Length: 346
Image (cartoon, rainbow, N blue to C red):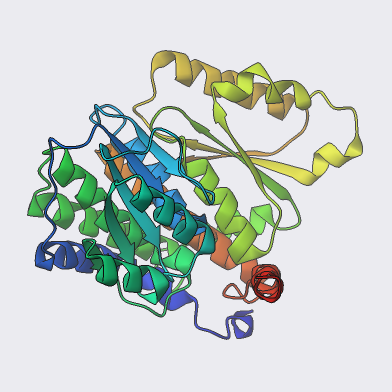
């Protein structure tokens, strides 16, 4: 089973707490000068694993961020981008062509730009143009550098809005993350590892992930993306309450193909009463169609802790599912093919 993990992908999962700790150190060692009064909205430029960090930051700060924040996943910045815009250009490799194109546009609009990257063209641009930047360690698959990309950008935005992050916050988060890793790693779990059991249940099914707004909006997308990249499995996601106004009707489909799906509900204990009621009703509707529904609860006492707990679980579930499918979790054949073909057409 483990022979397919030819790149020792598991080491990235085991090293997640180190990313949290190092991100705090990298930020403290940086010399960012953020003019807090000089911008009125935030643009976060990124694709894939870089972009999802911005989405999750937006969720964590949903009830604290008082200026608009937009994640841009394409070659262009919106017309609102101006000298009053704080732009965080996030590209782990530093060579993401969409992000490089978008940040060049942002510069023309005289936006305030901060780069987060391990190197590549983005780092070269930042040095040449004297943009502030934070450099993360290289050598990771971008999706597994989430800890660096998220926590550095999170600290940038918190600094920009005057939100203090205490050392205790990081200490408690690392303690919780280590405990969750311990419980989901079958080599250290006391009894069965939850993530492996869930992967066994998902095998040969198409996972559909539902989470709740406002704090878990992006986490369902993260789970979907990890299934797709790590497990090489098709997956879908949506948000409650939005899916109650459209997708819920799709479960009325009279077709045997419906039995190929398995639903994962990502839940936290801070849902409002109305969201809680919607989650229960949605679960009942789907189960009445004979579809398996698995509930995964976030751990922790804060929104940040709860989101990080679900991110860790997603990594382990999709890792084990990749092994069950005898897929190398590190490989991304189709992405590599696309990049290669696009280079030929540049």
